[in-house]
Image (cartoon, rainbow, N blue to C red; front, side, top):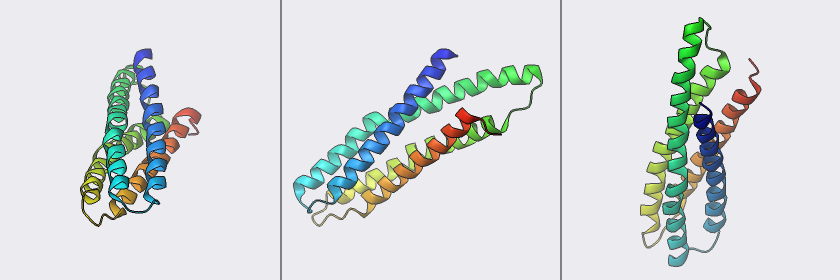
Length: 151
């Protein structure tokens, strides 16, 4: 279980850190004058982000499911009801991971396609960054509930 927890926390650090860093980079570069080289840099950053964010999100999801099912068996065998923070972390964390892996992938694909056009706009790119930051914020709220266990 400790290896799964390590992988889970490591994946969270990489996922949240890379999401924030890439989001800030993309927004900063979007403000530059529109040019072919700017669009190539933005497309390159989006492609490279797949190598960090998606594997980290997958590790978080897989290790979370493993810990959930391993821990759930212990709770059921003891007759203990599942606490609110665990339920919130389970459902919220799954939603955040799926939102990040699916919706952000679709938006980044559309943004890359949009950046290849001659008169490229950055609307889809800003939507991708918005979803990324919303996912990070939601993940931090979930992390707070998991750490503080307020209920």
